[in-house]
Image 1 (spheres, rainbow, N blue to C red):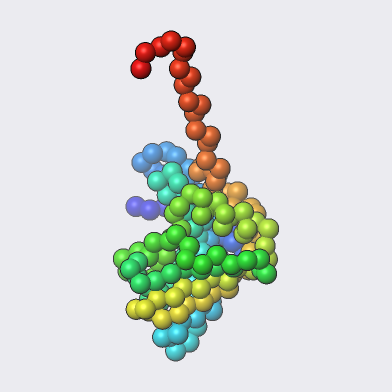
Image 2 (tube, rainbow, N blue to C red):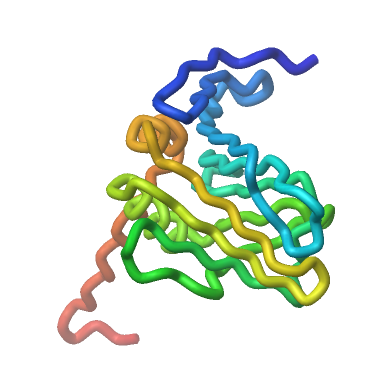
Amino acid sequence: YVSTPATTTSGNWKIERHVDRVTGEPVPSAMIVIPNASNSFADYAKSASMQLTCFDGKPIVRFAFDFKVGTDPNSTLGYRFDEKPGHDNVAARFLQEYRTVVIEDHAAVATFANELATSNMLVIRIRSLAAGRTTADFKRDGATAAIEAAFAGCPLTQPAPPPAAKKKRGAKV
């Protein structure tokens, strides 16, 4: 039995807050859905979504499409916010059904979220030998609240490493 989480909105974003029934921990998520993602192999535009969430205690960005977008060995993800410099060949993983791509690297997610918080428009582009070229434009309206809610359980800033223990003078190693 999967329960429907409490959902609020922030601009174009739907923010879900629910508690995991096994761990008792909160599992926040924020998602935006657009109707007009395009692919060079598709006859017409279809929907796509972007989700910000914690997975296994780590922040992730997830893009899902209604058509095949690529596979790990032969596809690349790039994105650009507003007129800022773009990011090409982002460290991303294409999931097995070939319709979903995730950014999981902590530093890459933090960079993405920081730019999302201060931008108006996001353009993503996927190039794939197997699935053609995909583009999607997301308006960030309400993204600041979405970022804060989605990553509340897995902060974007990594804790500083513990200080190295100092060796005592004359101590044998």
